[in-house]
View 1 (spheres, rainbow, N blue to C red):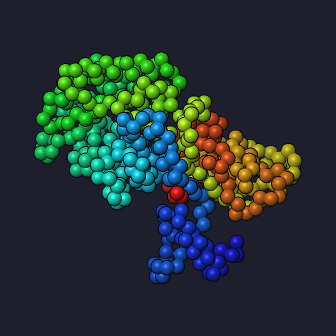
View 2: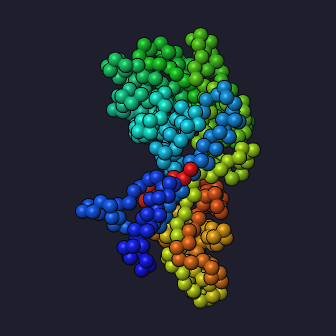
View 3: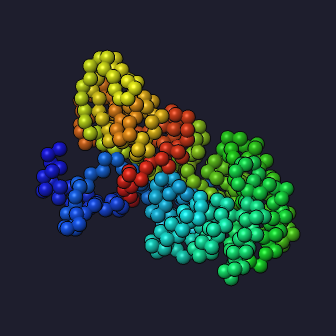
Length: 414
């Protein structure tokens, strides 16, 4: 590592890094007394490459699938599934997307500020899915965030806050047709819709529901859809107007075009994956995130040697082992221990032993070509995908994408 302590080498590394147009976030920490000199060399031990080009490609694929007459609400909750909502949303605005869905009011405010900072279109609309607390209500008005109404209590609170501030709240009514998480039961939904419609302080913009098993249980999804459509049809008939209707998540988008309605809500599809590895699609999806680290150290171990905590891997022959700069603190799940593969220089190698907080170990066999500093792809467009790893540990790709921790540098490429 002597080259990293040489000042000329550090300057060259920094120059190479800053001249790379793909690096657009997390500037180097600078010494307080000499702002132009980096304290640390600009080398990321673990990083998530985010391809905004692939993201836009996926959005175009989805828009072609649903047709030009329908709207697309991009789901960018959980910091855009770990991809950075502040970068993802403006990129999608460039593709004509003006609707965004987030988990709660805190995410909505961050997104609104990010869109404003990026000078994105001023008509961008943000819906927060969570049922709000009373103390949060004024922030929906302040930041022009659409509010989800799930019961009469929320509707009455929203009405009181709107009246007190002299400004109407835009709301979407959520119907629970079978997800069992948030939303009013269909038998009460019509009365709630009528109440919101009659309020002079609330603007009922949309009515929506959420599918619990789309893409796999078509019969149950269709039943949810019919319950929802019946309620909305009755309301629109009485109100003598239409509302914005949306229900289709990623699974429904790829499995049932009858669910598209007025707007669809893709999440995982935007980031290059189907909801599960078993679900296939004709869409040409491209993975948006590549999670990678670097080889820090290599050594030979003899037959019978053990590796990592708990001695869960034993060498069956003399083997070359690489230590890689990623661990569960970076979001590489400990459950992957002895189950995963990584990609180095285009070849797959087995991860061995327990995943530790900051490092994993990889069996190189007798391969002597892998060197210290080589990139190691954990999942992404090279090697395995997040769904591939998720299948190994009984989870879903969503979790692995969202788990990539803040200490992993995001590097945006286009």
